[in-house]
Length: 342
Image 1 (cartoon, one colour):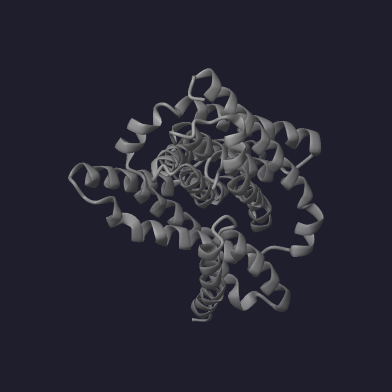
Image 2: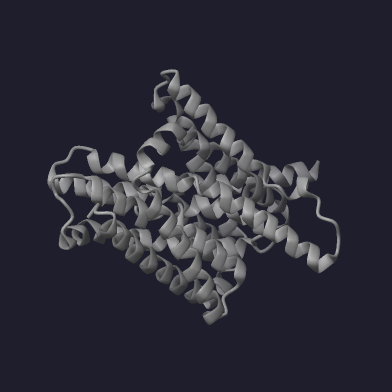
């Protein structure tokens, strides 16, 4: 009975942080609710001397709710639309993701950064920020401290959302079309809210309606599909590593990240519904719930994070994230140039 009470207490504590974080994220989208949730959670935990009474709920929220968020994320993906519109940007997406992972690995070796943190930063930078980190974390048994440090990569979205429209104008992107800048924003910015902010600004600057925004969001959704192969690879690599350390036989059923299967099923449901004329707006509440679940999970992670340790070790992940971001931006622009998009 006490365990049930502790679970509810932990969930309620997370909700008390997640709700204002969600509202703050709406007010300041370039920062986003997940970042606010982690920051507020880290402050709140300073005033909680004994977290035993909340432990069950914090664990449930930071682990299970995080997986539920990824599953619901699938309802935002119409695979038919993504494939049809994403072909043009696919080489750039593959190139930027590969670049980010390579840069993360190299800096991990040079700077002696924890492998879990570098993996999460590389994936978060190249795919879709907090959502990708949420999907990858369970596959590599990442701790809450490691997740909190990896979320620091979202910081660069703020800079990108503010700087990229003027940067695009400086580079000479076509002001009469949203195609080139939409692809640039969709491949070089990792968080959806910041992609939206940058693309919308370009539309406003050149009176393009929602042409840039539509292109950028579709490219961003195409990137999101990379969650599937990457999480599967991570799960199997982690299982193999654990087998080598313990010499025990791998139970592939337990190792396999089942929430990714449900993510794919959710995407298929959206695709089939779209093919039968269901308005995409029908899935908007589910997508909103997914975003809120991520914020809720980040609140739990913030509460479980040692802020002193984060301050002492947080510099390296930020430098790592900066390196990944610069690499992604350079490769995105280079490939667009070679493909005659820009």
